Length: 230
Length: 230
Image 1 (cartoon, chains in turn red, brown):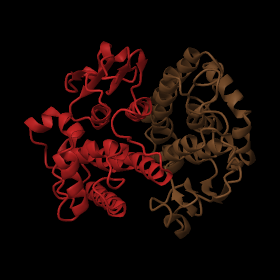
Image 2: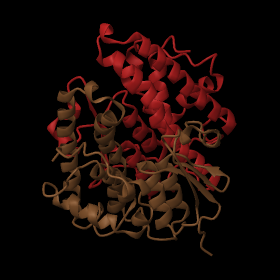
Image 3: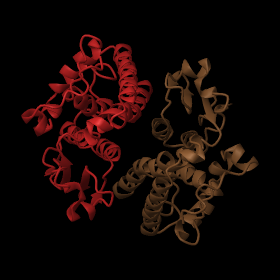
């Protein structure tokens, strides 16, 4: 009988890309019964005793799978795929060229999020407007545009809807939540990057992604920090 | 017949932890015949046309496995383990609790390297002494000490020589090169962290690690930036 995730527990924060990745993989693998506890970042829920005893780093996702604790999002996603290979679609293909491509794209995502988040959005979110070095922000926006051009190229090369072509894979589960965060922050993918725009639309409609869509993305508008990137 | 890596090509830089990880895994998996081309960071070898055509990010490792290109170190390590499961020791155990532990430790390494490299050593390496904010450096050293205490605790909990106990795994292949970089930069693990000190000694002597030891670590001394951390 299929495992439906009944003995799993996920602490998550709305809008956190690492949390969203794990939630997409849980849905893809038919593990929808995983219990989910929403924490509030503004209330410092991720630093609560309840989280800290499971995750001394005080971060979400904090993920329990039976008695096992797997808090790093990449680790949780890989663990779930490997353990539930036969449930849902294979998210890491076994054919060597596809496997290589999916792994390569997955682990390029941190380069993407560095340019998007650490070098740009976190500065808007955590600094006062007068503290921002505008020249630096302009450079960081140009770097983000270059990075996005690489991903547009990957989609062209893959020749399908997803980062590995015709099938949704772990590369999409890892990449999409970060891309969606940027779109929420005003990034307009079309017309500069038509493949990325079509990708965003297609993945948005995938049931695993729709079901796990961050609630506050639906209820509130993001600040348009990235409206002038493209 | 075992694959010995004859159709593989690795561009690497001496001392780069991401390169060293891949080299350790190649040795563990019996892929010693992989051709290796040493680049010089000071000559900007990683930005050469030869590299850029395989790796537009201009980074090492740049790794070719037959016709496949897998440049991200985590991706290359996972690809090699999955593809050559039956060669050498299993670096990701199949037993659930061990698999969870190994994956969790592997993906905690970026938190470790952020505190060690980005928040500390890169500043010493790429800034002038007078540009350093000494108060910030002192705080970063305290944060690195806390981080090291977590890894000491992981070794205590694992109850063996390695991060997963008695067997060398992918967690060690990923973590050790970063730890070795800190030791080269003056970090004295003993007596504060006896388990980490014993770990460093044991892993240093592992054939895959000895064989891939960065040549310039043998020939030159590192600057003792971290001598006062512990």
